[in-house]
Structure formats: structure tokens, C-alpha cells
Length: 488
Image (cartoon, rainbow, N blue to C red; front, side):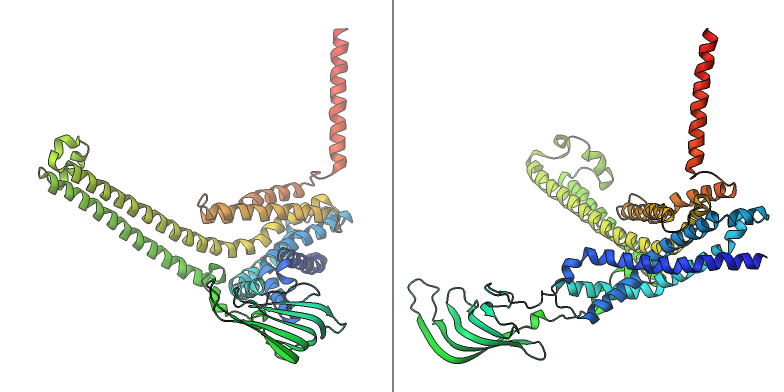
């Protein structure tokens, strides 16, 4: 009997899980594209480049899509079973809700393991390649698009204006090519017509111009009195090439972004964190020694100047009046050098704080990434512990109420994780507390919902709230009627 029930619940869960996973992944990818749509449009990117980026970015977003898919599919599964009264029949047979949830709990644990392996081994590579490709796309120049009647100045050193283009965009008329290499000279070409084409390797733009004039100013006219030669040459045919290498999409080597902690596995993060701790301790010790040495030199200087007491008493003497410690002839010199020494100490302390702050920030980022890999995988189990009991309480299948509830709890998870990460980066919370903030919030909610579901709670039954409100109104009315009867 239990095996049949296990098969029933697994079969009811797998279908919605697969569907919601791919839908969720598609929505997350489209949301990412919406943020960078301006950087993709008009760049002349090939289909292979776009598909490659979608492939890498989808891999990066899988650990975020899995928890939402688990939450939504578990809500739909238990909601549908509750709506068809199958949960009631199972409970009446003496089978507890926890026993009925066990097969899906095991599946959620399995998905957690898959998510962790994905975060540890695949996402670092996918993130590295997607970031590198996105950077290349963002910094790529827009595609070559010369419009009629408008100067096109994106080719280095030239401004091109075409009066009219024929339907095939090859035959051009009323062409002006202005050379911008020397702003103090006028070098330009005017032609009545021509043929425009791009070479096979897309490296050069060729203009085969006809019936035109070439104007060129020769000489150095930096000085107002300098003489220049103005040359005008007529031509029947003239060929002009423009270098388009700056328009070509060039992919950067992945090694450029290898220094980010997001591209490390757990083993690499452990090694990096250990190295950063040792390096921070070493730098902290060196900086402390430098400050102590500067202080020692300052105190020794006072001793040498006053010639009264040893260094051990210097701190005590600094607290006294300078009139008692320093001779009148040396006061000005001691004061000037003391100010210089204090400024030097202050500068050394400030530099120490800035250096250590940067190094501690780098260490925190590595720790945050270490916890992120575990948090995103455990989120599958945490959200299942919310979705399953919540679905059995709501008792609604389909994509209506379960979708609203799933999005609500996922937003709580996402925003609490984001806020916790921000606090961890700012050192307001520790990396552990910041990255596990969502778990601290959602786990008690999941336990509460499980407790309510096991006792057939009417927590989300609007009719129950209506009956409670009606009973409360009746109680108030009876109370008022009793008080009125007592007075009479």
C-alpha cells in the first residue's frame, strides 16, 4: 500500500516539477535579457553568440530556478490532492502527512545534492564564460548602419553622408566622405554615385565612387600665417576603403576574469580563504609593527631633545606641560618635528585601516560565496517544507492560488538572501548570518505550516474566517443585549 502511495505522490509531483522548472528558468533568463536589452540590440551579433550566451546564463540561473520549481510544484501537487479529497482519504486510512511527504522529501534532498554539485563544478565555469561574453557584448560597437541624409561618424577618422541608397543598399548617390584625421585641414570627397559593399571577411568597407571631386589641403596651418596648398582633383572612378576591425565582435580570453571568487569551487574557496586569513594576519602584524616603530622613534626623539628622562617615562612626560619638559631654545623645533611625527603616525594608521579594510572585504566576499553554494542547494529543501504543508492547507490545484503563494514565499527568500548578503558585505552581519538569513526566517514558517497541516488547520480557509467573524459579531450583540436587559 505504501509503495502505491509513494508512486502516486511521486508521479503527481514529477510532471509539475519539470514544467515549472523550465518555465521558471525561461522567466529568469528573459528577466536577465530585459536588463541588458540595450546592450544586445544593434550590435550585429550572430545567432551563435546569442545562443551561446543563453546557454551559459541558463546554467548560472539553474540553482535559482530549482528552489522556485520545488516550491511551486509541491504546492500544486498537495493542493490538487487536497482539492480532490485524496489527502482526506489518506489521513482517514491512518497515514500521517509526514509519511505521505517522505518520498518527496527524499526527492528534494536529491535535488539539493544536484544543485550543490551544479553550484560547485558547473556554475563557476558557466559564470566565467557568461561574464566574459557579456563584457565583450557590452563593449562591442553597434553594427554598421549608414542612414540616408545623416553623417555616420563611427568609423575612426571619417564622417560619411549618403544622400540616397537604392533598394539593395549597394548603389549609393550624393556621397560625401569627410576625413577627420586633421581638424585644422579640409580633406573630403564628393561623388555623384557609387557602389558600397563590405569585403568577404567583413574587415573593410569599400566605396567604388564615380564622377566626383577630391579636395585636399596640404601643409601646416597650425600658425595663422602659415601657407597651405589647396588641391582639387576630379575623378571618373575612385576607390576608398574603410577599416571595420573595430566593429568586429572579439571574444576575450576567459583568463581575464579568473580573479573573481564566483568562479571558484568549494575546494578553491577553502584554499583561498585560508591564504587570505594568513595574508591578513601577516599584513596586520607588519602594519602594527610599523606604527609601533614610528611611535618609538617619536618618543626617542623627545628623549634626545629634552635629555632628562628615558623612553619608559616618555608617555608620562608627554602628558605634562611642554614648558616643564623642553628648553625654550628647542621648543619651536620640537613642536615642528612633533607635528610632523604625529602626522606621519596618523597617515600610517589611516593607510593601515584602509589596507586592512580592503583585505577583510575580500575575505568576506570569499566566505559569502562559500556559504552561497550551500544556501542555494538547501533552499530546495527549505522551500519544499513550506510548499508541501501549505498546499495541503490551501487545497487548491492549478496555477492560481499556488502560483501567488509560491511567488510570495520565493520573494521572501530572494529578498532576505539579498539583504543578508548586502549586510554581510558591509560587515553588519557575519557571512554566515547574512547568507543564512533566509533560512532563519523560512524554516520556522515551514515548521509552523507543517504543524498546522498535520492538524487540518483552517489557516487559509476564508469560510472559516467568515464563520469566526460572524461568531464574534453575534457574541458582541448578545453581550450588548445582556447588558441592556440587566439595566432594565
